[in-house]
Length: 232
Image: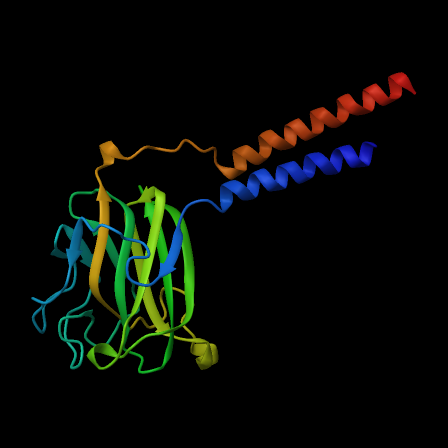
């Protein structure tokens, strides 16, 4: 009975902890999968060869990487001249929050399959991170893009993305920021809400939550043992 009691509490602890860790960002593929009614959009049609891509602004959105624009075959697509080892960071010009973000993604690798690494933040704190592995992405205007999306009912204010070679390239596979980034972006769409209209979800941090539950487990176990000894 004592073992079963403890196992029940441990199971409750694990389920409750996982429900917190797994909440937040939902990734998707396909047009309209993350943004049903865009409030802001950037098409990058006015980019000029050699133009700086650092803090590029269009349609109320800020799209930034410390590089310059321009490569044959990527006309009208946000693309660094030859790639870089950084990531593209997307925010709102007014500091608003994203409930959804969607974009067409192109690749400069020339490979059929590519990896895209992403990270979302709110107030400088990571809210999600992950990897789209081996997605079919076209080479600039010569191919068909992949439309990728991110949505979160608790909102985020920053999205970082980078793209490189897929798993077929073994040790040179793109799996983290800092590897060679060859992402192209077009038709960036966003659903924005102002900070004053966005509810803040007061969820305890996993570490504090875990400590609280562990204390309950220990307290419950001691009380149970005392009862068993008293009535045995």
